[in-house]
Image 1 (cartoon, rainbow, N blue to C red):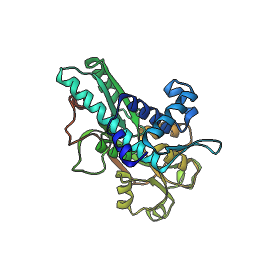
Image 2: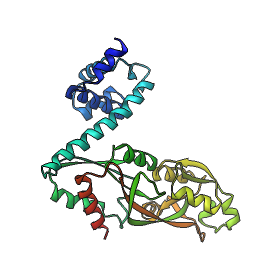
Image 3: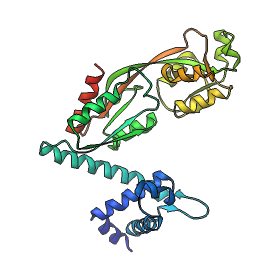
Image 4: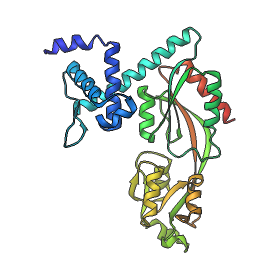
Length: 305
């Protein structure tokens, strides 16, 4: 197939092509053909046939599969990113068309940062309930993701709205405050600092774990003159490193409480090693949020007073 023929094919994206792309996304996100059977509710042989059909359509090999395991090719990574953006834009288009007829229907993709459910200040569940009453035909999709992935997903249109800790202003996104979260310094229950209060000088020489992307967590380390010797992408990873007894790190007070009560970790007795984190609702500036997104945002802001 020549390059001209491939361009002609790609210019005619049909509903069948979109279905193949959805199958490919499910395969990639599940980590293989067998793992995708459950989410797609079709047999592996049918999934394999769809994947081969898409590879033939695009004239590229999307993934390696076999006894050695499953892995996306370089071309597969590019197609996965493009497919996610395409389907996200298609959902937004359908939602906007529905709005022309004064309907609240379609799909709404919301991203949230990790470990928010136990925060008593978080009213996301209330907003979801009120939105469901107002728009029962809308399909909600809740994604738990890292801070950097959430921001990128908002910018490229994969997520219509996000709820996450605020960490920096951006010309591309609009950020609105919702609630606050207390962060304290913790260590394993068997760490020497759990029982004996360290001096600030000793504390600053200790091994710390920090989040691996730009965040208020990272800014706090800079401000306090601390240098993390390990990183994690979320609070669960931070907790695992703390439990080893080798590191100190910041955790949300509400999240850490049950692990303190279980005798797994302790709050480090040190003044000045805590901070408050403000969670925001985030939407893209351009193109402007759809009516569906604004309806949910309105209820989210109202729920948080």
